[in-house]
Figure 1: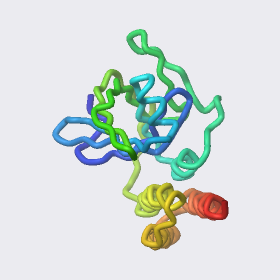
Figure 2 (figure 1 turned 90 degrees about the vertical axis):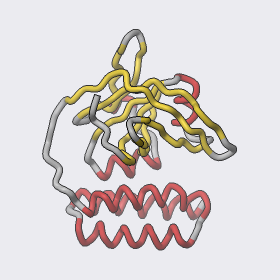
Figure 3 (figure 1 turned 180 degrees about the vertical axis):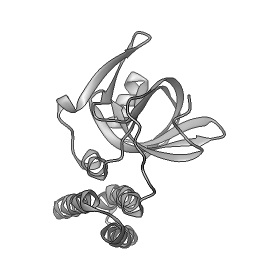
Length: 189
């Protein structure tokens, strides 16, 4: 199995009809995820002991899955060796993993992943796009910012927003507008 590269691979993880952007850490072939307690993903993965990495290059989907639930028709159920998993419908590739909570703290759980299946559905060339990367980074910062209102995270979001405006295209600009709306709405509450 070889869809993940060394380092942190940004994917949209699915678990029991839930989707969220997650970084899968690949260090010397050992695969892990850090999931924040209280999230649907952490609860589902700890309970069901599986997760799917969805490889998709849509910046709007990264933002949406960070802040809202997708409709049920966005998911496809797949059976692998008697285990039923849930993946996103519109992906280029996906990989299913057995998941085991390895360590736990008050804030997060560290999950060890073991690959069980992967499938490439559609390959497209994705040139390096700093606008797309900046949307991913801004989204990561925004998920933390809405919880703790750290001004440094706010500055990082603005930095990446500027890069997305400069380097991105229409889909990145749409994702940025959506991200800014989510942050505004969630920080007003």
